Length: 185
Image (cartoon, rainbow, N blue to C red; front, side, top):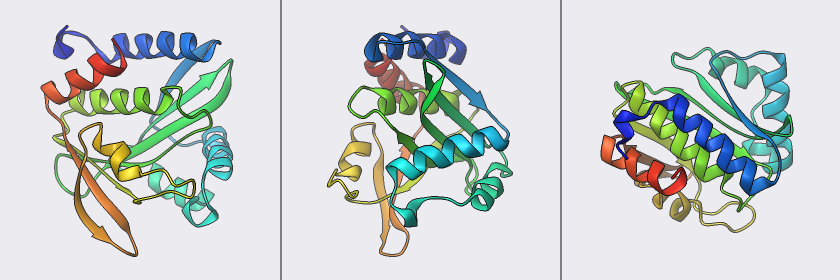
């Protein structure tokens, strides 16, 4: 299967079917490019449940981020209830996409992995050369986030005690094909 021969829309359908099977319900994934009150509420509710207070964005911060060029947000719904999101936008570095925030209410079910594969495919189809993010070594549950992101091909590009761990993934057809083959076969 050649990732270049399949469209984002086809992989989106595969992702919805795979998640529906894994989660035992009806899943759909919405891809949005503008913030509205409903999206603000969804992101805030998921962040409130999953993130420490200092990691949560305010409505104002979310609105500012949503106005950045290339803003894209994926929302996963299970039986029409939002359970996960990931959003990002054009990075200040030419050709780079910044994956700003991601969270899922259901862990260890493949939701985050599938969203990561979809986001990288989106980046490839939209001409991005790399995807960047900032994470932390360990989250409040003790999960090793750098190791988690490394399994997708992200590598550390910098560390700053105030900002966190900066990571990057080079977006190539082979990298994206590998992720899609693994998480969306």
